[in-house]
Image (cartoon, rainbow, N blue to C red; front, side, top):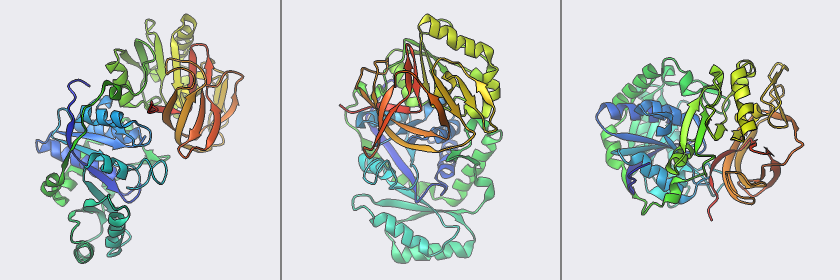
Length: 449
């Protein structure tokens, strides 16, 4: 995060709803522009972990190369720092929205539209027209007029069925909304779809033919989108002076931090890790699935979320990894687990077939996937105990998303007192046992003072 600057040229790829094709379009646009010699940088609105990993692959960066920005969960200075860091060597930032344009933490807060209002970056709306013709113009009109200060700079129609379908769409837009240019018509093509899991895509690291997919998406953009017109629409956001506080979303867990990273532990926010580095911490990665223990000289271990339930047999038999955690706890190293990482710190995990698998046993926690239950939403988390994350009553913001149920939690001290984005009190959650602590909350940033 060195050499930040405060003016970033960008566009926002938004959509009418999830599943409209904005991720594929974003990936195709990133890949196409790079091939044309344009230095592009990606950003992702919202708490999604998976889309940024695709972005990073498209632009040839590490997983730390694509940042999330979140208007509910992040302070404005954190958003500015993320954009500054992403855009410092780029000609253009391509910011992918989340869900539908106006969908956020609440009706009034946390949407892609809020990011557009903050940055002034123009909105390109992606519309899936596979089941409509002229009515698509009415949809675009509704989005353009829904909020007075939020206007569309262009539209791209996705899954166009034929030349006649395209003619109908263009005629309807010309008659109803000539001020909103149609920048592209992407044909309906099954080879331009990515597989999904739960509420998101299958992880980028699990795609064996990802480069070929990116190439197809880039060709589709080159053939069917007016890229020159799109580039001419881009606008500059001057975010003003960026404070060091923006580059420090969370306090470091220690001076030297071992971070679990593989297909079971993939859900760490790049901006959080970069923020730890910016505050002087050293980070090393290790793979629990390969039965690798964290280095004996680290003073902190971070187990992020991911999909431990898909690899529970390997994890439960990863003796060196599990013993490494126990040894670290004994010598006083800080160990922090989020969501899947939290479950691994517990006593046991029950898989979908009802089989119980032993975990690290460092927290009094039992979890199960035998009867799935969705827990989803933004969380304001107030610390109930002093940890490296902050003092008692310090507030943080984050997100919860899992299908696990808790079979037993405690006895022990809770980590957080939490509430939803709308202020609904949700009680206490997580556990603290000496230098080991965790919860189901994925932390994103500190609460604004």
